[in-house]
Image 1 (tube, rainbow, N blue to C red):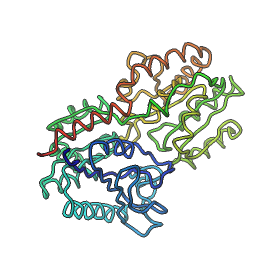
Image 2: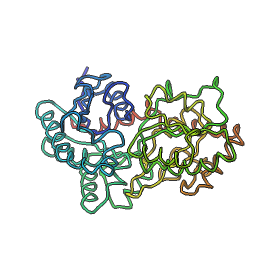
Image 3: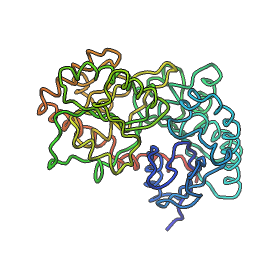
Image 4: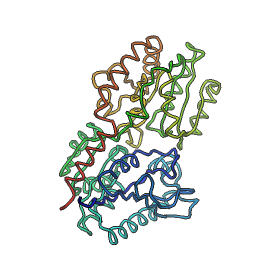
Length: 400
């Protein structure tokens, strides 16, 4: 039996400990890739993070880039939003880049690595591009949306183009991102549309024994501008006049949290809106399975940042939850022919409310639609299928 090949994964977003509320989609992919490969995940350290060690068969190596308590560039909102919200965090950028580059260099120098997989074009893709050339190791790059849409400017656009076209292969999480690359004349050697996945077999499933509430809206996600939660709160303030018993649960964290709470307070909605903060993954399915409607008012933020293919939306779909979603590029990959029934312009308050009312007044029709959407997306977003596609792509690009 041949020895497993080794891949080095470069990422910024990664669980700091087992029950961390930070997005874990990269770890979920790494974990599944360990069936076929030895996987080393090089990720930034953070305050109270677990030490470097094996986590579910993935060798996680954390690099230091500042004193422990100051290692806050990545978490609670992501790099781009943290830099926008806290100007002082720009001081962390040089050591963040140097720390990742140096540690990856040391790994490649001391270990036999067969391929580098970089998540996000910048900075991980840029680091992978330079190390790939230095060590003659192929690299793949995955863009998740924010890096492609949100990091703008002539220099950054050139860096993104160089990374994409230098990679052995590139993946994007939606067909809209593929079209965006074409429009920008960025031409990777090999391009695949492969989303991040959802566990549709064991975790995010329909539970027919649970009766859905009749008066609850749910939002799950990072509290950042591109999620459009401020528009949802404004819409809710009007909607509650028609449905006084209606409740809104907001699950998530991020730099917009205090601003959104102040908005709810100003509109006298504290008795109807519950900010639940971040919740671990195991608590999310029940929320999706019991709420009346999952509302995801995604927008294109002022800095150009927008969703690639939202994980929370995929989770809600997996649980058969009725949904209302902002019409941003890429959503059609999930919604297909049902898209016109449930997508809205979140900046139009009346449009949000009319979509919600349609579901509240026709719950059986909405549930039937949600089942159709789930059935149509299983082959696209189920983790087992996603991992197989990545395994095949990695194997194709590893040098013999």
